[in-house]
Length: 285
Image (cartoon, rainbow, N blue to C red; front, top):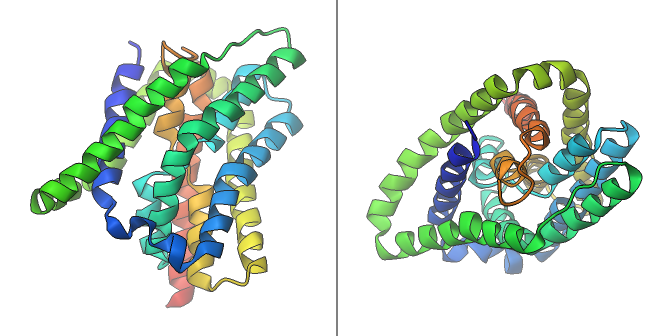
């Protein structure tokens, strides 16, 4: 069974949910806190791929896992990061702004970064991997941009119904992602068990380094604790479903193995960030 046919509907639903969450105030943070938005976008679009590239290179990951780890770093978190920001008592408005902007901008930055990584991996190894940039861009538009716009139109046209649908989808999003992770684990259990040590280490390093670097940058920026927490969560939380959809898509890489870093990342990401939120709330009490 090709799990891409399960990944795609889940990703479409998640992006539709994000579209429902977006309203006219979604981009208000650009004018309200331009410095914080700029720093958050810098962390998501530049810092995180660099960290992932560095971790993959330092650990000498095999080519398919090298690309899978960088791919995760190129897929910024969706509506889940807004929920985590709320739980951490961060700046939810800033979180929504960063989510909205990054979801649109990465439609174009992701192909550029992955094209570079594909050439780097192919040059450094005997494995020749090609990236159909045009197909990647089309798939991203169909799976990400169109559902996002559809959700936003739905909210604008039928706000009451959209609110109800949003509540239902919001409750179903996390179980759907965990079901997806379970299916991938069952399908690639041998590969995951054999490579869990190195993939778990690389995913954990990516998450922790992203959180630490974004926290340091936000402190240098002189932001308050709520903004710092939001930037840490936005930079540290990636859209694993999007990475899985690109890696396993028969139109792009058609590689289940390339999706394994995203699966392990998703599991560790929730554990680490939930622990982070718990520590913050305990400290506040």
